[in-house]
Image (tube, rainbow, N blue to C red; front, side, top):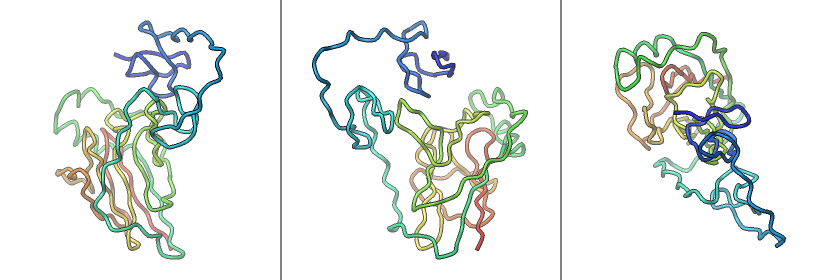
Length: 220
């Protein structure tokens, strides 16, 4: 069951909108604001990003101070280094009908109910830095992935923190972060083991969710 927040977002949670963090009551309307206190707000530190905050939600990452802070999973890779001088990498995100057919044919809960989007233009993301996160952003959870697949259209099979691209010794690898529906590469049936890097090269296709394919590209 989803709840619509005042900003029009469909939220899977009924206490706070999992897109923008707006408080909700059980009827899906903004919760009553607490009475203003004459006392000066006490500045505290956000447990998720370390930034100073004076309210419940961090203004930098959106983390709810009442929610637990999840530790990032350890990724057993060598110390990341920059890609060679002149090397440029990017990822193209597309709705992949052939992959969607494989997901539906494999079955699973609600697999057939996830329809292929009528319109989903390709999106491009530059791969910059030692790590590139893949998922769907959630302000209330403090999740802001580099390759943000929140849509529209939105692939409901993609976890908020789904996978990670890491570079070491000039080579990229993809790591599944224990996602709900798993990650596969190049149409293979076997899903990646969580937190175990899999090397990817120019043209490799990373499949996540119900119909999303991410293709990595390299240009000199």
